Length: 268
Image (tube, rainbow, N blue to C red; front, side):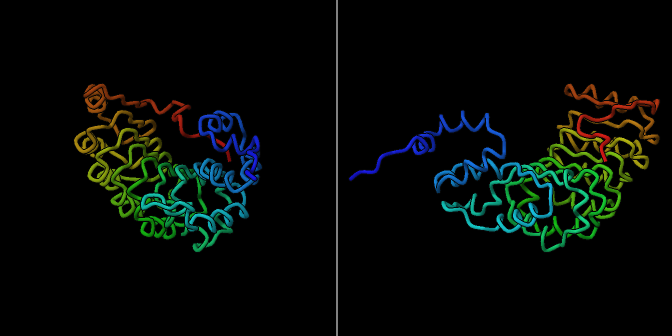
């Protein structure tokens, strides 16, 4: 006797219907839907892993264990569950880094090989040595990554030259409130030809020399935010960059602006 299809079977078997339904569901609802049956797990898991919310140590531990598991229908490009992850925002759980071990974080960098966006904003507890080691271990992640935010991360600045040389496809880079200097920015101009969006707010060691290097080395640069950078004084140079190819350069020579970034905030 043939089995009778249930309403859930009909939903999971119709990609168009399923996509419309999942757009209106919140993460807890998706998690429940994922547990209904095997087809539900196969269908909903990619949606949950695309941009995982990691707000507790227990969530990090579970995520770290899962990313290295093989996908049911693995391909060369998508072999592990980690390959489904596109966005990682560590800033939402930055205070947890004190309790995290290197062994807990390293699988994330090894198996999230298709990651696009990585946010380390104000993760002050992450040491520079660990930061460097993570990127050295995640070779494929480095090539895939297009957006990196390290706002306020002064502890890692000495390792940025090594890390930035491994990130050829970065289009968005946010370095606000760090003590990066001209040497770091020169590496950016040499190693990130696809860079389109750069923020260096309150980076007091960056000078006009670095801006000149960006002008020549990053032809796709379309947004440059340089507010409160006291050593960047050649306004005409910024204007020249702005005039090339419709580029937009945002600068503040008075140092009095309060709102300085669409990507930053003042939460603790």
